Length: 350
Image (cartoon, rainbow, N blue to C red):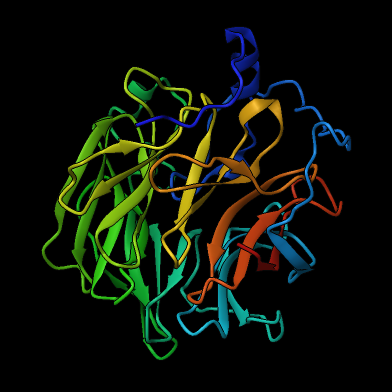
């Protein structure tokens, strides 16, 4: 199987590229601990280096203030859930709004920082990750330094389920260590999430109510961002490649954890992959080739690598609507204060 790979680069360029990735790329692993690097070069608007964003049409910004990220649709495409930090000193909380950006509102889950919210298929409930009550937030998982100190894992994180009418959210996991980055199968009967135990990352599958958790696969370092394919046959995720600690690549495997296939070989930080509902492509974010974080697509067999976004600033955390016609993502394009990021929506042109 031919691996997708961009043009070769020297080790010095690669080290500079990876050394200072902004903490905005963090998902449930809280923050990324990396020394700041020289600012990534701005992509030059030159016909030789920039292609139009031909897959995106009618780009619209749905939020206007603060730091917003990790937006996704409910299953009928009428509602959006996302994380919002209105000011730098605040925690990330969960918000919901209509798919056109109207009627934004805080979703009640209590105080503290929240991670990785997604709607429960067929219901108004929300799955997310948060620290257990009384647990010291920010503790790193035992042995997390085995990854070279690159990824920080909050060992107090568990998966929670909250509904608007609930008196209190319900914990779905209680195992000591990091449990986060959860997502549902398309039918809503199963949840897959990332776990971190003693410096070893794994993907865990469970029933939608948290019963019968079982490890699908484990790798040294960090494994995260799992999503089950629409037909329920495979899973896509990001992971640190064997023998490396300062990069992430995109992988797929079957639901038994076998037939592992590495899709990318970009020697960069490539993360948060998502399936297009057609299962003909996978969209993910990467800072390959020395530019800042941008969206890429690739076929499930590892061919057809293509860059999708060409705008200065962060572009990441993609999410498709169930019909595949709309795309949400987090973007720092359009200016604003340093650290701000907004939720964008566009029509997807395959």
